[in-house]
Length: 205
Image (cartoon, rainbow, N blue to C red; front, side, top):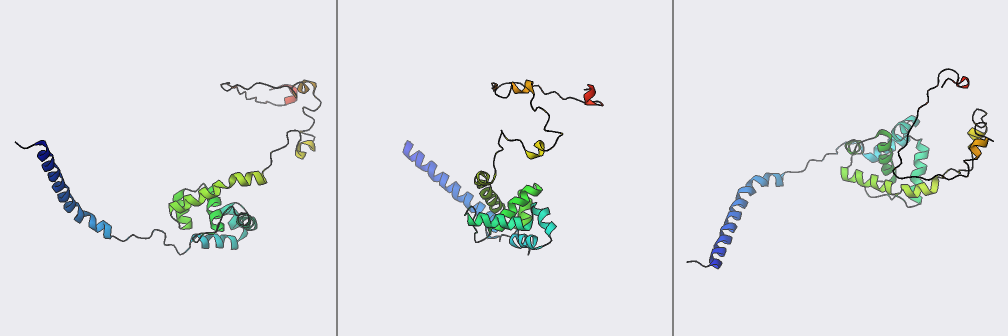
């Protein structure tokens, strides 16, 4: 009677033979796909770089429609990003095209498939460049966006008699100017919509 070691050895040999047979069966079926040449997907003569160049050098309305800004402003932003080293020109794509892809996506709510077609780049390249621009948004926010001063009223309100008199020198409102109110995490709010009929001054609300 064969020992357990011999049984295990025979089992492994049988498994190896089956694997070899499976390999020789699958190899002829897989070989045609291995030898098949990849067909380039993006073959348009109008590359992304050429497209951005034509937009910036074309009619002034073209850049407004595609990127939602004037060509001069677009170039200024691209030069600023280059000077501050926030974005870099690469071998396959300059900053103007990177910014163009990002602005086109925002302006037209464009999908990755459309961006691939418009700028003739792979989905991986498009995604990576958009991600790079998103990464510099916090830096641009700190540099260019200023929060409004809560103690300052905008000139459009102060200089317009339709707006400024309301709530000014109001005794009832003065009570709440320095009063703090607690905020609750699970607070349920009730919103009311007032509908005006006729003259508000007449009390028809």
